[in-house]
Length: 240
Image (cartoon, rainbow, N blue to C red; front, side, top):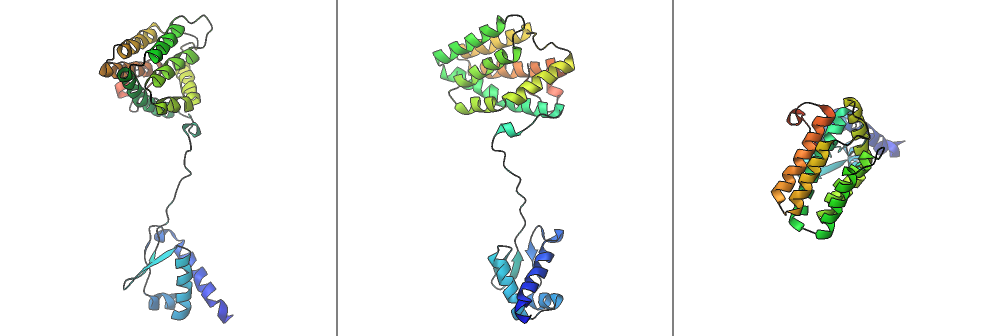
């Protein structure tokens, strides 16, 4: 029984450290005081404290005493954007705001890089949406245009971000159109014009113009989906 006293002391101190007031860490009471509180001798207490230090729950500072390690709450990491989900209108706005930043930068980089093959791919994607046959998929053709712009930047991270968010973007577009009573197969002339402005600026090598054109396109998309002033949406961004 006496040989198990350190284990009992260890359990009692562990229970104490699990209380909310120790979550942020702190300095333990002096050994004499702590031993008296839990009803053990100092040699027994020291064995329990040594075990807790081995477990990483305590650390000591010479001449200062024993300290409790703060409990760090680590949320499971999101290994990809696909782990995020669209549940509310606010989620859509956050997603679109992220896209606004990413896509504006991608358009600017595309204008700077001036890859003729990539720019032709943007033009092809634009033409496919402008000439979409009745019943075609607005989302697929529209998304293809934005992917082409991302690819033309020469930075694979832009395209990866958009591809990973494809499902969320599709859900947001569908939900937003339903909110506004817009048909899923209707292509707005304004969207075509805005795409032309993005393409024109990229083809001209106008970096600032490409960034502005993409930003404006996304902001107008928010207005089309949610109504009102895009600048007053709080967390605005890209929709079509």
